[in-house]
Image (tube, rainbow, N blue to C red; front, top):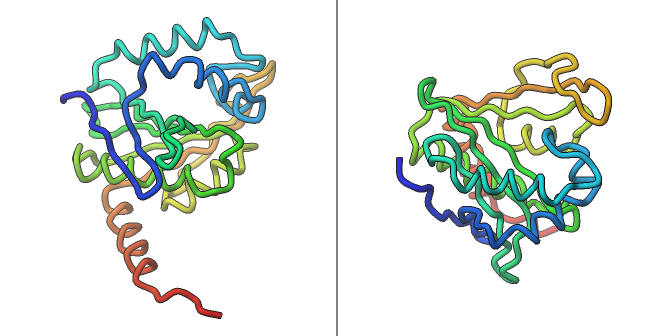
Length: 196
């Protein structure tokens, strides 16, 4: 598999992360509202830990992972990250996403995630996407549901974070689920705008 390509939506450009993104990543990952739901980072953020994480990502083979900077086109600003951790043997990947809290509530995460989902099923021809989030992360839950992921269960006390064990919800999307979700989205996009 070659290096993952740049993909776009109407408002966003998803491009591979670069080391020059380091300062911006530290800035928004340092927001407590963001860090509290990241598995491998704690608040306050440690820049050297982020530097090592970013170095490992950039050195990883593309068949192992894809990490995109979510860039808002109109300002050219990096506002988040979306990731795919590959399992080529089982024809699946795990998706992750996080966004600068200043951009929450504007539909950027589902917009970026849906484009990555299209990439997984249309370009990479994988069979399954997995997604997990801590039970308390209701924003991620809403995104997963909006995208068409199916809730498959819960890892009781599956993550250790901030000194305690957290329950984790597990979601899956199969290629057949993607086809169904895509048809629903296409139908919704064909509906006339409500003029009331």
